[in-house]
Image (tube, helix red, strand yellow):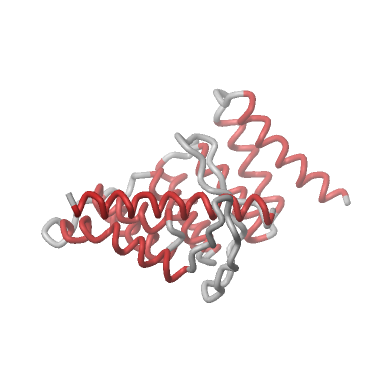
Length: 218
């Protein structure tokens, strides 16, 4: 029972962290986050990648708490990942376990660690396009824009029509490389190869394309 209580508290803490970061991103309105067209739940809104050495500012949340530091979030992630890491000692090539550990570090903004575990999982199952796209996001937020583009391009070699890979490729090229032509090319291919997109998702892509084209005119 004590272990269950500790795990529940850790789960609650990690969920609070995600809420705090989501609120901070929305309130600060900094940058444009990498997103997903198809996902069960949206990722928190995050700013453009910053230097890994920078410390997050303390921002009050709706409950009166303060935003955890990177070190505190790392401690939370380490604690939650510990049971899975113990299992990996005897099952080091279990891609499911590796992915779960990656998700823990990703959700607490430990992007370098998350990318490392996703990379290990992809060495076992290289055709997992969804996880490769997650890894690309981690690399982007960790400041490795070229690495993110490389992973997304590799995802598209496995699935040339993957909507998330094409969408994020456009975002990374636009926000990370200031390559508006490359972004437009990715999104044009996205719309062409995914005619089944719902109206709202199609509208999202078209709005981004319109924003780029308007900016180019100015």
